[in-house]
Length: 53
Image (cartoon, rainbow, N blue to C red; front, top):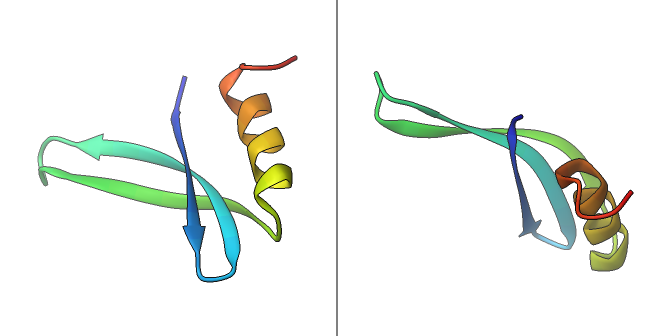
């Protein structure tokens, strides 16, 4: 199961996938979607992480 992140990016909320590469010793973020409100973003984030069904 991939790891997801939720963060504010300017005036929008960004949801994305994050993975760690040991070879490069860094984290790689891949944005999936942008949302205008925190409530919309939180709802989608909860669906992705399995917090709500």
